Amino acid sequence: MNVGYWIRWSAQHGIPRAFLRWRARRGDAFATLLAGERGLHDPYPLIEELRGPGLRRTPLAYAVFEHAQVRSILRDTRFGVFPALGPEVPAPLRKLAERVVPPPSPVEPPSMLVLNPPEHTRMRKPVASAFTPRAIGRLRDRVETVTAELLDAMPAHGSIDLVTDYAAQVPIAIIAEMLGFPPADRELFLRWGDRVTPLLDIGTSWRSYRDAMAATDTLADHLAEHIDRLRDEPGDDILSTLVGSGDLTMRELQAGAGLLMGAGFETTVNLIGNAVAALSAHPDQLAIAQNDPDRWPDVVEEVLRFDPPVQTTARVALEDVEVDGVRVKAGATLILSLAGANRDPAVFTDPARFDIDRPNAKEHLAFSSGIHACLGASLARMEAVHALRALYTRYPDLRLRGEPVRRNLFTLHGFEHMPVDLGPVARSGAPDDLAGATTKG
Image (cartoon, rainbow, N blue to C red):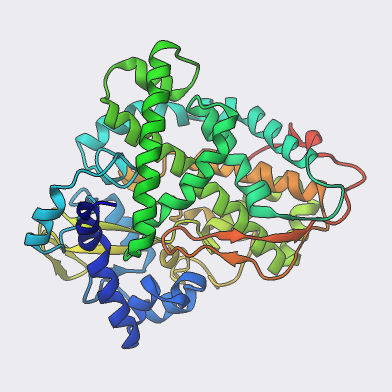
């Protein structure tokens, strides 16, 4: 890996990593949340320790944990996203790092994840057509087919890794088809995803960064070849439409496809895994859903609130702004805790309780809000509802086998491995019988 990447890692991750580790050793709860073992595996006690009204000033950035403030900032056009080289990077190091042109990826421009209007609007508008209610409705049959195929391939009883054998397979199959990739590419995408996602965290290690950049290089080459094929032989998929429009450059197409792959997969796999963990810990709530299949959308909404797949996001002040009496200067960074907002007692009664009867669960901010709200929220909900309902219908006695292994990530919150004992197959009520059931939300 060349020296330029090391310089860029130092600017993006190396300095914040050293600073956070130092602060965590001194007992700083915010640094521990972002970079400590407690923050990775059980962030909620730390969030409650940090919770307070308004903005919390930390040595690294402002931190926000309250629902009203997080939602307001996400929807306020005076705040925006910023590229991976954030405003806190010292100017001399920034100049060196900016000379290094990284491969197109979900976390570098021109990915819409790190663009503000008008560039963000130009990139988002053509992609949004793939996630309209009508488009999601057309995908429902395919999700049901993929889920049934996966369940049919499982043993009549025995053990599986729920994450790798099921939760990951449903969304990767759908997003691969949406981008026109053959089934043979799915496992490649899963491996690339595991290697690239650390780029979303603050203070990623040099080893993880180096591995992620190597994977990103390889993925960019694969995407370029695929995009060239689609120019000659377009299909009935969103990437073919984007390629055929002629409105986007190759780099923009690569960055957009990479973001869709990540966003279309990561949220759903973590959502399904977090749901199984929550239901296993709360068998009374599982029993409610098993007795009434129409309650699975309520399960998904409460999981999104209770243990969201994406824990945090960040914004930068584009101008001097006053927030709840605090003067925030242009260029200041704000770290917004989506998980904290989702457990705000001012909005959610007894927020640490997992309760699928919660009447306002959908007020969560798991999919963010404002112009950067997750495009694939409806797809993730639909995939998770059907995957969970079909799984527990086929295997009503499914149980965890040992302790699941959390991913070593903070921003993306989910499980790397989740061994389960399936139990016996249900005698009736096969997943195919659920095809006509209503999917709310």
